Image (cartoon, rainbow, N blue to C red; front, side):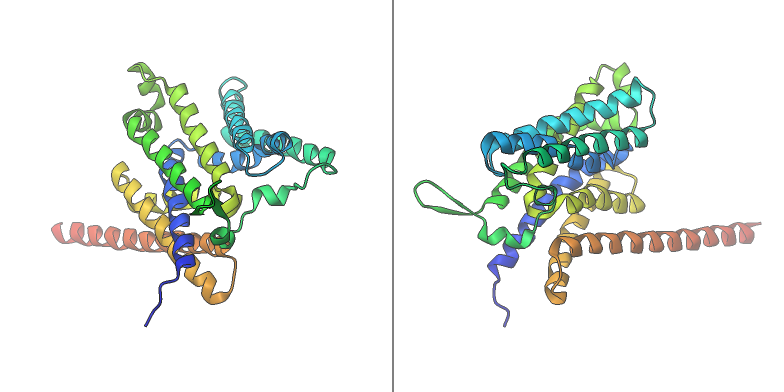
Length: 299
């Protein structure tokens, strides 16, 4: 008889919340051909995290989130400016922005290392296995459960509210930004709002799963879903299903193999993607062969 494992449930539940948040944003990032902007933001926010830490003295302070959020928006503006004004290609503008800001963050850490207990690894690589013991204890002594879980719930609520309020605008500007501008949609403001949500989601998920899994959840589930469907609503639904599958299968495989949970989740996401590539290519060949046979028979 199987027993209920509360810790396993909390880890899978929180990972699924993060996967859903990243997937919802990742769909629109992919449609805008800016999927790897999430990777740029995940590195570019390092100076903001360091400055916030210096101000608050803790990695959990609100100042850290604010600092990282400001740097995330700054990174977005820099990428957009380099692409539109300096006429630098998108991939080059992303590379220039995140390497420059990440290097500044490393310099800040090196300069103030004697004052703070902070390094590149501790702000970029999380471990979701520690989630059940990182509890939110109120001043009255009440235990509200894992702190990261509540952050993930808040993050998903904000992402859902943003996409619900601006779904039409996001859809139009993702498929045809120029047409959106013509009909009066503030494309720049919508893009900045989307990048701000990506920045907040990335930063709020660092402690739980780390930068690598956040980027993977932003990119891989939407890319996998895109292999199966081109309709936006179906694309979103399939992305969310894949994100939850990655969380569930990744946890149990990591448990069975005694491996990193976040690392196994990324591995599962990659396996699902390549399996989808193989199956869709095989299906395309079958359909193409069937169509040729039908044409030959009709002639």
